[in-house]
Image 1 (cartoon, rainbow, N blue to C red):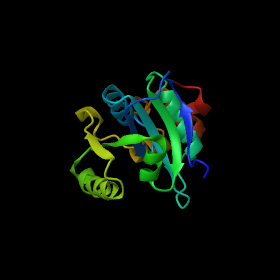
Image 2 (cartoon, rainbow, N blue to C red):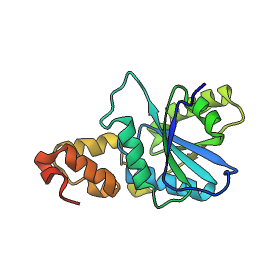
Image 3 (cartoon, one colour):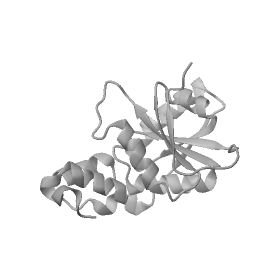
Length: 184
């Protein structure tokens, strides 16, 4: 059966990693809060796969291929991080890439219940794959992709909340506010 994912390598390793972790999400777009979680996970694990879930019934702000490219560019400074996309069950993707754990970020109490339910479901589907929760720094806990899109759509100052490649991509989306992407 052909693989349901594509890896866009933002860093390469000479040997097979021992402890692979998947950080799944929509990342539409990836934010500095997401990047903080990726950087911290990269210190804890041999390899981190930042995986964009492809949902055929949902249309994202950025196409999933664009999100993978933005993640790869934004994480290029972290040698043990790769960007990928997948369709189907995330736990199946974890098996395909040999992940031993799933990383999730918890921003607030409201995140806990759905994340807890998903972690229990994933444990039931694959008991050998653990879920690890990381809490972002307090100054990043309010940042969400939807908030960034909302600020950008109104011409607001969103730049400090996203990596530079995402800022440029959002500026191109809203040339009426940001001059067609010429600002950094």
